[in-house]
Image (cartoon, rainbow, N blue to C red; front, top):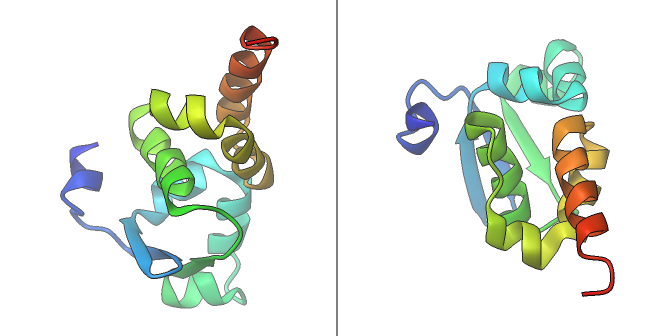
Length: 112
């Protein structure tokens, strides 16, 4: 997590609106089948320039998912307040473990 917090040796930038997250391609690819495919294919612009533009989610939820990649833990406040959006992002990027966390949280909070 320190390499993420201090942006040590980052090799890609994720842009969400006006905000940016510096990350490591290897961490993204290891945790998401979608990122793996996006970053391995030479014809994909993301693979060529290391810039990934995200347009369909909040910065907070996407950053929480990236932090999960590095730490294995999800921000509890984001989970509580934005579980549906977080689940949607995890589903879109095929982050199965995070999908499971969101599903268990939703099931345990039915009726609350």
